[in-house]
Image (cartoon, rainbow, N blue to C red):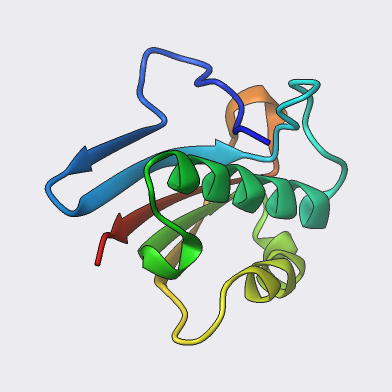
Length: 118
């Protein structure tokens, strides 16, 4: 299933040479445009959306070198981390996790990525 359309004036991904910059993905269900349930569900959906954008660019999650995770509440870190760990495999991408005051659409998590084509 394709990822949701961008909700603003930006590209979901841009390729520069062998590097793909993927814009932040919320836990939006592409079929309904609504956010998934709690933090685990939104994390899972955000990662599925990220994988869909990667696929459109000819890449996979194995090409991801770096992610940034934005959490509305750092209290959700452990649960997000469990879901995240089930999505990627070793060697895991480098990652930064940041607590933020708010996310678009009232989301609980947003994830962006940088991938390198091999």
